[in-house]
Amino acid sequence: MKLSSKKNKVLIIIVVVILIIFLLNFFQKDIKSFFYSVSAPIQKVLWRAGDRTSDFFGGIVRVKILKQELDELKLENQELTAQVVALEDLKKENKTLRQVLEIGFQKEFKLALAQIISKDISQDFILIDKGSDDGISKNMPVITQQRVLVGKIGEIYKNFSKVMLSSNKESSFDAKIQKEEKDISGVVKGQGNFRILFDFIPREENLSQEDIVITSALGGIFPKGLLVGKIKEIKKSDVDPFQQAEIEPFFDVSQTEALFIIL
Amino acid sequence: MFKKILISIIVFYFLVLIQTSFLVHFNILGIVPNLVLISVVLWNLFEKSKNYFGLYIALIGGFFLDIFSNRLIGFYILILFALAIFLKLVFKRYVRIPFTEKN
Image (cartoon, rainbow over all chains, first blue to last red; front, side, top):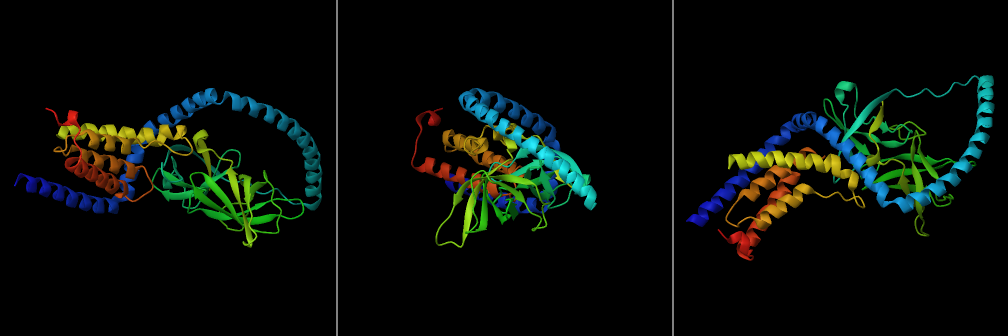
């Protein structure tokens, strides 16, 4: 008798739970929006604290790697300085040519600044503190200060929105690698867990590691010229008509606090 | 009972906030410890098999995980609830942990 009453109790709980869950989904947006606005101040503090603590401990753990990186960067810096000088000359030349041809520079984007509040643990989504009230709408591109592509706006709430990172499994867009002779076009696909794949690159194209992938305006979602990442590993097979390459993304969500949304 | 539920609501709310805003900075190979899942499993493991508070905890934890994730509300609730029920049944039938059965 006692056992069956306990079983009944569990059964009742299960039915009630399923009913509540079903009902909650009708007001999903409002409920989530409410919780986000209540939690935002705490989450901002936690995000900053996490950022600082991980920087501190990360530094200690990686002293050896950092030293090696420093040496490499010094070398790279020298090379880049040489390039800058060369580019300065080109810039001057370009400016004069533009003046002659009367071509204006590309219009700068109108941007909205947003702060990251939290990150979804299982999917490549982040929550930012700007929403429909700030003029944000779905599919708007999200970038960092250095013009690195982060993703696009997925879901929007009143004062918050979720950014679908370019590494999200459902994300795909056109991109290219700029080469002197001819651009290499392909499709960038998210693989989840901050991994990105550069797919549908014709087999005859010569890719090399460290090539920089940028967005192209073909897809219509992102403006052209945003940095995506650099080629890490090239996958080529004799059977496939296309080759693939793994991209190391330039953005690091855990190291970024502020993002820009292109309006 | 009501007081216990209220306390666990507050505790799980903060656990999820810590998990989504603080611990994401410390991921190892992209893995962030799921504090809520760990707490629900531990609670149900060490709770006396005749008590059912572990099930409530699974519901509360699952609800907050759903709120701060990009899934429909119910995804984590059902997973954690099913897990809690599974643990309860297995422990009731096949496992006895001496120190949880005392008193």
